[in-house]
Length: 115
Ligand code: AMP
Ligand code: ZN
Image 1 (cartoon, rainbow, N blue to C red):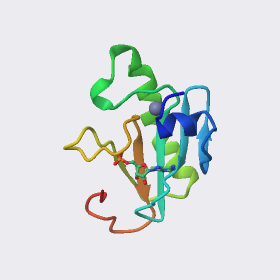
Image 2: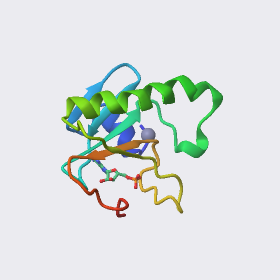
Image 3: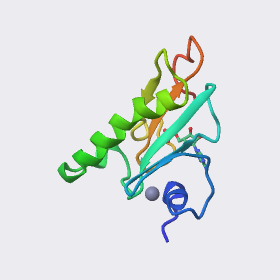
Image 4: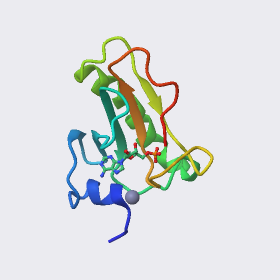
């Protein structure tokens, strides 16, 4: 098995607070929330980062993005939320398994996510 922590979460080897799951996608709460609501949407299949995305991944990425407002509404974020994808060293990416942050539940939100 790969050493990737989000692959392990996707496989259920490491527990997570699940928000949503289907065949291809998992959403779970961030372990260090930076706002009252902070969850991550990941593909179950390993993709290093947004920089590695291929043409074949486009439908999956579309589904992940379209899920964000649905799950945000489910979690009560009626007045908006922020989506963030950190990419590479300069982008502040810490976990190299593609993930979309969805953050909300207070106003104003922190200007940027901290690292
Ligand atoms: P990034 O800087 O975009 O790579 O963010 C990685 C995020 O993953 C951080 O917000 C971490 O708090 C979060 N994280 C790391 N390990 C876990 C875990 N085991 N469960 C939930 N979230 C995690
Ligand atoms: Zn992975």
